[in-house]
Image (cartoon, rainbow, N blue to C red; front, top):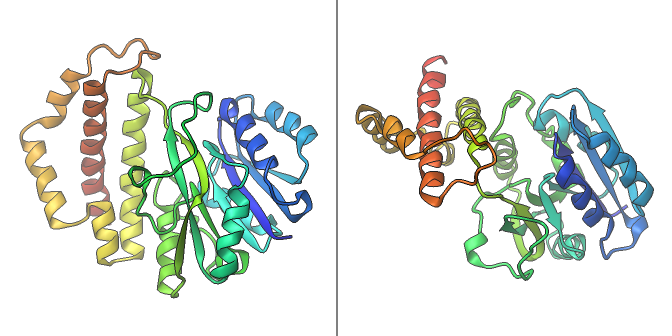
Length: 300
């Protein structure tokens, strides 16, 4: 088997059906690939979506159910079950184009030992998609970004897969990338291995979750820095004198409280935030990240 598409899902039933259908509609022969889905303890309508998907799947379709344990453990369960020569990681909010796998495999043919990074176009809806043409504004500098990346299965297994100490949100794929890079694994980029990445407008009800996610990411950033004490980690996570000093200054100025006043009424959870409010919300999450980062670092 040439390839495995691997994804994990948690309470994304409203997106998962479209994502799975796109995975099943690839241009390469159906017997040459499979889809391995890890259901990470979803409590919404995900089981019903999976059952409908089983009826439509034309390629191999494997589902692994686990209690909610996070992406690292879920990815490892997928890696263990995968049977393709190449494993292609996406997320449950990523809609691959029909030639997605074909393009990943085409690049692997000329770079057999490398990872292959594909392009992603951010969209607010899967129902109103722009032309499938990647451009530089969609570029991500991440070396190994599980939104759209593939790697020889033997290579990811050789490093032990994902580090399950990353049990909260954030950095588990960056850790994999740093370990692969340390082994001299090269990266190739193919903008035609394209997918749409769901990035909806920020709503009032999402602000609290965004702040909690930023705090979790700060704790895992401290874990990453302990595992990889080098300049790449310090720059990516903000664990460096410049960014930490800047945060201490904004905290003394009471920036978070000022930003909170810009948000307006958040009682209507479905209200789409105005752009100025969205900027304030992102800045509040950033302040929460650095506050939690300082606590996490001092606790080590």
